[in-house]
Length: 127
Image: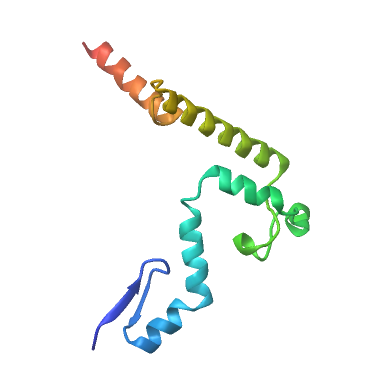
């Protein structure tokens, strides 16, 4: 049957030869899937900067949906979303500054802290 190539970005496989692989790697679906994958790892500051330069998407504001989705060249974020994102960026900057100063900043989120607290309380009650 021959070798098969599996693309992790697209979650699909096909017969591996130069023509098929080149066609797939230059295809629109692969490029979109690859972009979406790398967008998952962007920091909040880069996302905020990009979203602030975009104009709001009229169709998204009117209907709540856009045919282009994540490929739309306009912003799908509301004012509240932008405020939350800017607050997140400021929080990240503060924690980064504290780490640089040598302060002890606990890693993680509120949910992590609540889980640890619940475990400690249950352990204390069982003892």
